[in-house]
Image (cartoon, rainbow, N blue to C red; front, top):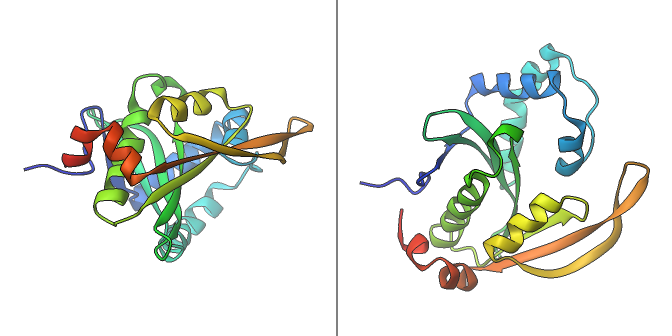
Length: 190
C-alpha cells in the first residue's frame, strides 16, 4: 500500500486548524529576506487577526482552485509548505509556490516536495504543464528549478520591486512528458 503524497524524505499533508501556530511563529520571527522571495515583506500582524483570518484563508484557497500542503520530514517535523495555484483545467496548467525553513534547506526536501506535487497534478489530475516564476535574485530557487529539469522559458523584466530596485522574473515550465522522461520511476510510483 502506498501514498502518493509520501516520498522517501517528506510527506505532504493538509493544513490543519492548529497549523495557524506555524503562521504565528513565522510572523513573530519575521525573516524579511525569505519574505522577499515569497512575494513581499509583510507588515507585522496581530496574533488574534491571524487566528481569525486563518479559516477564511484556507476556504479561499480551495475556491480559487489552489491547495496548500504542509511539508513534513519523516520525523514529523514541519519543514515548509508548498501550494498549487493558478490551476486552469481547460488549458491543463498550474503553478506552485514553495517555502522551506532555513534549517531544512539543502537536504532534498524541496526537490521531493515539488516532485510529489508534479506527480499528483500530472498523473492524477491530468494536468499538462506546470509554470512557475522565480525572482532573479533568488539564486537557490533558480538552481533548484534548473536541477529539477524545468525549462527556462523566458524572463519578464523589472516586474518585482524590493531592496530599492526592480528585479526580473525568470519563467520556468515543465510538461508532463518532460516529467515522465526525466523521472520515469517516480512518475509510476505512488
